[in-house]
Image 1 (tube, protein in one colour):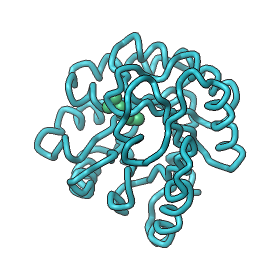
Image 2 (cartoon, protein in one colour; image 1 turned 180 degrees about the horizontal axis):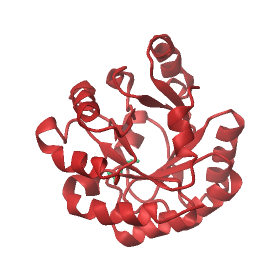
Image 3 (tube, rainbow, N blue to C red; image 1 turned 180 degrees about the vertical axis):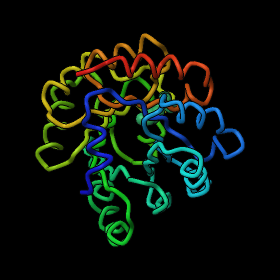
Image 4 (cartoon, rainbow, N blue to C red; image 1 turned 45 degrees about the vertical axis):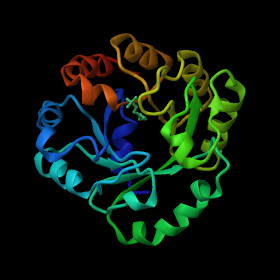
Length: 244
Ligand code: 1GP
């Protein structure tokens, strides 16, 4: 694994990643996010989605042209692969039992990744059911772990780390009514030694404080950035006020 983006993740502040769905955001309406990025308010752009009709390439090239913030592909499927991003979250959906999302897609993608200059970030992706069916659940054909099954979530995260994955991602699903609970984040964080990404349904100042206090290292915001861009400046300041 090439180290530089990963090294920046493990540095001593919490990070804000903004999720960009190429179907919802285009080069004409992304200037506000680029301005925030250039003011140091955004640490990473994640680009991708569960079901994306628009190829992510155009938006990635635009982001890279106008800002220095690393662009990380967060692919919902192999169809979203493009070597134009700086890095890729190579997701293993370890909460599920769909072999394509545990190894099949990785085999198909490996020759392309090997040829590309992208940094590969092997990530244990854990889908949590916080009360509603997410797009990821439906599209991935996997069963998310119920959010009251703390022991299963923690064991899954530990297994991911033991398998050599470099990041754990707790995902409630984009637009989730409820984000992953503080208790669950805290339990997982106490049991792993790799960075923890948390996303899905985080949309208020209080949510941000809760997930930061509980131990999230990277906080992913998607829907709130699309709908209430004006809030991101404040949210970023909260996230960046935490030091380990
Ligand atoms: C990324 O799915 C999240 O993990 C983004 O979720 O759109 O609810 O912020 P939101």
